Amino acid sequence: MKNNCLSNLRHSLLFLLVWITIVLFNQGLNAQDLTNSKFGKGLRVTAKDSSFALKFSFRFQTLYQGELNLDSNDWSDRMIIRRSRLKFDGWAYHPSLTYKVELGLSSSDHSGGDIIETGNTARIILDAVAKWQATKSLSIWFGQTKLPGNRERVISSQSLQFVDRSLLNSRLNIDRDIGLQVHHVSTIGSGMILKKAVSISMGEGRDIITRNSGGYDFTYRLELLPFGEFDSKGDYFGSDLKREPKPKLSLGATLDVNNNAARQRGQLGDYVRDDNDVQYLNDLKTLFVDAMFKYNGFSLMGEYGSKRGSEKVFATMNDGSTLKYVTGDAISLQTGYLFNNNIELALRYTSLKPDDLTFSGMRQEKQYTLGFSKYFVEHSLKIQSDLSLTDIANRSNVLMYRLQLEVAL
Image 1 (tube, rainbow, N blue to C red):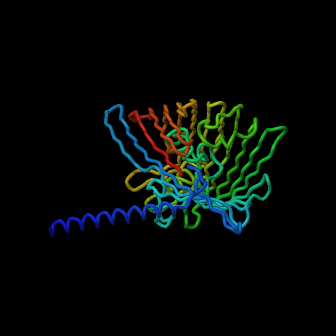
Image 2 (image 1 turned 30 degrees about the vertical axis):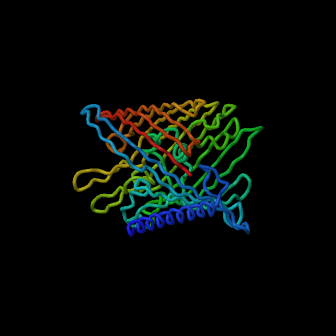
Image 3 (image 1 turned 90 degrees about the vertical axis):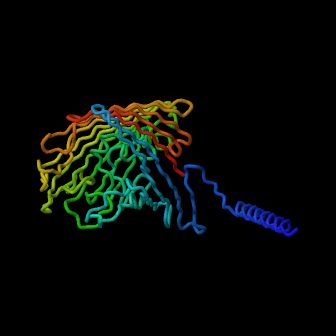
C-alpha cells in the first residue's frame, strides 16, 4: 500500500513537472518578439525619434580543405571556421551620415596581431568607418575600411563565385587601411555611369596603433559602366544571381602608390626588417585593371595586377632567411553560368609571375580551378566547392579540394 502511494506520488510529481514545462514553453513562445526582417537581411532597429537606425547581421563559413602532393602522393586536410563575422551598419543623427562596423571572430579573421604595431593583440576590427553623403553624387568616408582597389578584393567574402578569392588577390591586393576616401558618381549621356574614388591612408593596414613607420598611401580608381547600373549592385558580387535581362559591363582601373612602404605588400605581410631591428622602406606602386560582365545567368570577370618597388632590397635574417617585397604581375580570369535551379558551374585561371627572381617575394604559379555552387538564398545561404590544380615553379604540383558552407543571417 505504501509503495503504491509513493508510486502515485512520483507519477503525480512527474506529471506536474511536465505540465509546468509545457506552460512555461508556451509562454516563452507567446513572448517572442517577431521581426519583419527576412533571412539574409539582418535585424533592423530604428529609434522612435528617428535619431538613428541600426542593422545587425552575423555570418560564418565552415570550410573543409584537402591537398594532394602530386609528386609524393601525400594527403593533408583540415576543417576550420574560415570566417565568422559580426556586422553593424545604419545611420546616425541624419540618414546622410551612415556607418559600418565589422568585427572578425575566427582565428583567421584576426590573426597576425602578434607584433608591436598592433599592440601584440588580435586584430578584431575589420571595418569602422563613417560615410557622409554630401550630395546625391558625392560621398566622403573617414575611418578604417577597404581601399578602392581591385574588384575581387572589394567584393565581400560572403559574395564570391568560388570558395575563396584568387591567387592574384592573395598576393597583390591592397586590402584595408585607415584614412579618408572621396567617392563620386556621374552620368554621361543617356545612361553611361562614371564612378571615381580617391583615398589617402596611413599605408600600413588595419588595427595599427604605433606611429607610422613609412609614408602615406594614395589610391585612385575609375570605373565606367557603359550600359548603366547592374541590378542590386551586381558589379560587386560573384555570379549573375539577378539574371540581368540586358548585358551589363563594368570596366575599372586602380593606381595605388604606397610611399616608403614598410611591409612586404604595403598594407599586408611582415614588416621588412632584420634581426638587428633595421627597418627597410620601399616605394610600392600597384596597378589593377578589371572588368565584370553579366547577362542572363552568364558572368565573366577578369583582373590584371602589377606591383613594383622603387628599390631592389630585402632584409636578411641571422639564420640566412630573407624577407622580400612581393612584386610582380598576375592575371585572373573567371566565368560561370547559373542554371535555373540555382546551381552554378564556374571556371577560373590564375597566373603569377615575379618581376625579379632575386628580389621578389612572389613565386611563379599557375592555378586552374573548377567550381560548383548551390545557392539556396543567394549568397546568404549556399554550399560551394572547388577543385584546383596549382602548378608552382620548382616545387611539387598540388591538387586541392575545398567544400564550404556559408550562412549569413
